[in-house]
Structure formats: structure tokens, C-alpha cells
Length: 397
Ligand code: AMP
Image 1 (cartoon, rainbow, N blue to C red):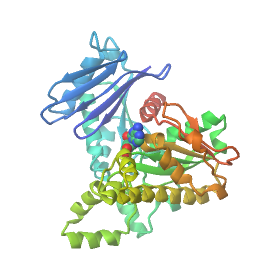
Image 2 (image 1 turned 180 degrees about the vertical axis):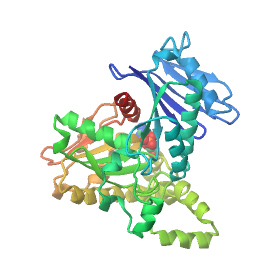
Image 3 (image 1 turned 30 degrees about the horizontal axis):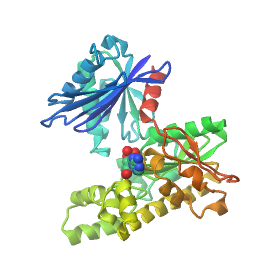
């Protein structure tokens, strides 16, 4: 079975064609500048990279171009579109409308339109991607795989905000979380790597990338996560503030003459480690700046690690113990200093990292970086969200 995984953004579209028999990526790539002059498709297959410069006024044009490459004589990996058994689409927010992976039909797409405002930066793009695929591949089975699904198991006392309960019922304002496919993948991989039954494990998964979230996973199910109604909540991120007193936002808006909408753009794009450091949202730049003596870069890194550590502590309490901490995503997989800082001082809780093991150079493999005698295993596991989307899609068929 071959599954095409699509991750559509407002002006971009990433894809992977995965053969599920050996879970092998046959081809992958991405379209850039959809709807903007200067469209480009980067396609990787047969160990080669193909760069195609072509205007893509719409997502439908982008998908058509991708399919053309997939069946191309030189760059292609299949003979015809019929070889694609189904398409799995990544969707950021499901609200309470969808609890699990769902097969696309007209009714489902009406519901998708209704919940689009829950993730105004992401969901409309996913809808464009689905509609484009339906136009170019009519009749092909398609699944919506939601970032939020893995978090649907959070108990009510963990996912509700302490607002008027009637307002929650009416407007569905609550914690939904994000990065669910990643948390699901790495928690499952942790159990597999340790040769343990997921049912028996208490795991904290730290997805630390440009967007970061931390989840508590008990018996294979998510019981809490740091992101909230939107991906703005939780730990500070590249450009997002993370948790902040809402009254401070109102105060800032009044002081800076911003509307609420502008205030949210500010919190999403100009804050986080970028805002604190004034240097960059990229942790590599921050590390270099700190090394060169920039104290605000040091502060941004310290704030990030401290916030992550507080979530680890909170989730140990929520889980009633801890067996494994997993680090994943761009920062989690590549930055030993951040991993060390997050767990520093937690030895009293049975969490000890091995400095030398932790300083390995990322080779794409799973690494156990716990110190000998550490009761809690500390694992670094490369995430693979596309594979989860493909697996979910295949399972649905
Ligand atoms: P992601 O959103 O998962 O792609 O992660 C992006 C973040 O990971 C950025 O802040 C990068 O600084 C960081 N990152 C990615 N690759 C590396 C690397 N090789 N070394 C250090 N940080 C990295």
C-alpha cells in the first residue's frame, strides 16, 4: 500500500510518498511560494534532488505539479496515480468536532469549514490542500489526521479552563494541544526501544522545536499537554511567548496602542526567545551569541530550560511518577546543552543525564543519554510525523 502524505501551509505544501510495506519513503519534497510569483518545487527521489521552477497560482496547481513529478520518467517513483492507495492530510486543529482520524467526504469538509477559525493560520491551508487533492484525484480515498487527536484522551479536569462552564459548552474554548502526531510517535517508539509495554509506562515527551510542547503520557494515552486552545500556550518558543497572564496582554495592548488582533500577532511572532534575546529565534544563533557573551541570549536560553523543567515537574506529579523522558524535534534532537539544562538538578527525583552520552553528534538514531543508575530513562528520539499520518491513513482504510 502506498500513501501520499500532504502537509499544506498557506503558501507551501510538503509531501511524502510512503510505501507501507516497509514504511519506506519513496519520494518527498515541497512546493514553495504557492500564490506568489517565483514558485518552486523541490523533489527528492532515487537519492537525487530535483528543483523545478514553475508558477503555482493555487494549491491545485501545486498538487498537479507534485503528481507530475511522482510519475515522471526520471524523477518519478510510480507509473501512474492509481498506485497511490490513499492520501493522508495533516490538520492542526480538530476542535471537538473530530476525535480521531477521519475519512474525507462532503459532510466532513463542511464541518472542517466550521472549525477553521480554531486555527486560523493553519486549518484554512489544510482545507485548500484537501480540496486541491480532491480536484486533481477525484474518487481517491483521503484521511484527515489531526495534530490534536492524541490529546483527546486528556481528562476533563486537565483540558478545561476555569471559565464559565456554559461558555465552554457554547464556544468549545478549552485546551486542545498540538504536535499530537509527534508525541504519539515518540512515546510509542520509547516503549518499543525499551522493549516495554506502553501500558506500563509513564512518559514525558518534550517536542522542542520552533514550536515546542510537552506532554504527559500514561499507559500510551496523553493525560496533559502544555499547549492550549491554540499553539501559543506552554513554554516560550522561537517567536511565541508561551504562558502569560492575560491581563498583561491587555496592559501591553493599551500601552503599545495595539488592537487585540495586533497583540496576538505580537505574542505569536515577536516574543519567545527572539523577543527576550533580541538576537534570533534559532537556538543555534542563541548558543553562539551566549558563547560570545550576550547576556540576553543567555537569559532566553535559561528561561526556556526553566519553563521546560517546570512542566517536567508538574507532569511527574500528574503522572504519579516517571519512567521515561523523551526529547525530540529540532532542538530536542540537536542541542545537548538544552537537554542537560532541562533535567539539571532533578537527580533527587531519579533523573540523571550522562554528560558524555548526551554530547553525541546527531546521527538520526535513538540515543539513551541517561546516567548509570538513573531511575528515569532519558531518550532522544527523532520524530516522524509523516509516518504517523501514513500509518493512521492506512489503518483507516
Ligand atoms: P523544528 O521546528 O523541529 O524544525 O526545530 C527548529 C529549531 O531547531 C530551531 O530553533 C533550530 O535552532 C533548532 N535546530 C535545528 N537543527 C539544529 C541543529 N543541527 N543544531 C542545533 N539546533 C538545531
